Amino acid sequence: MLKDITLGQYFPGDSVVHRLDARTKLVLVIVYIVALFQAQSWLGFGLVTLVTAGCVAASRIPPKTMFKGVKPMLFIIVLTAMLNIFYTSGTPVLPGWIITWEGISRACQMVLRIVLLISGTFLLTYTTSPIALTDGLEMLLNPLRRLHVPVHEMTMMMSMALRFIPTLIEETDKIMSAQKARGADFETGGLVQRAKALLPILVPLFVSAFRRADELAVAMESRCYHGGEGRTRMKQLRMGRADHIALFLGAAFLAAMIALKRLGL
Image 1 (tube, rainbow, N blue to C red):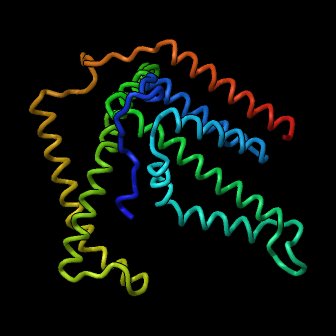
Image 2: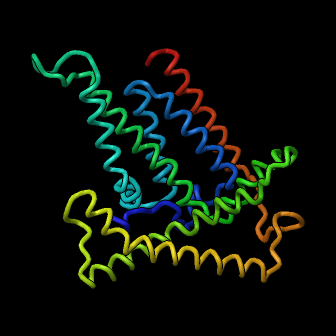
Image 3: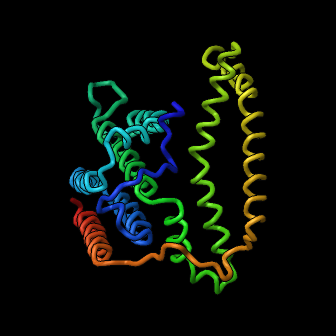
């Protein structure tokens, strides 16, 4: 299960999506999320699905990788579907049943919305390196500096968090394998027993995380790191023709979704 968590991973490539400016992709992700929550009918969900499939195809990210990102969320997806099936009023599927056709339709739409939300947002980290993501986010939030908001420090922390998610997952997997080799059992017993069985994992994981944080702090201090003041970037972000076209298409997509919602389609 841990190996299926792909949040924070970057898959290098030379696709159209990879070459887009990080700022463009950040704005498009926001547009995508807003447009997704405008979908209220199957026509709207179908349009969002086509756009998502097109973006995935353009990024050349294997569909198997996208499904891996959804797999850890299966519990939430199933729970959401069950709640919508059993607690949505309408026409019963069979006389006397609490399951309604409206509940089934709403459950399918909610599941599709969650899957599309995960796929669309994960595509950002899959196609954007942590450094480019940090630089793009910092440049977008630059106006907040006038309000004395520590923009550089905030974006740096977010970048480090994304960077170390795969590392911590790998570390957790190694600790679990080592504990299983010593006879630890994480799959049997009740909820309390399983929680107690996690202690041999959490303690060394926290120790390892604090050790890595301390080593990172020492390394940054040794290189005289003191925040964003006076710092330069090795790779400058520049928006080209493809970015302007992508932003125009994103705006058109959002306008289409809003129009579908207003028309009730």
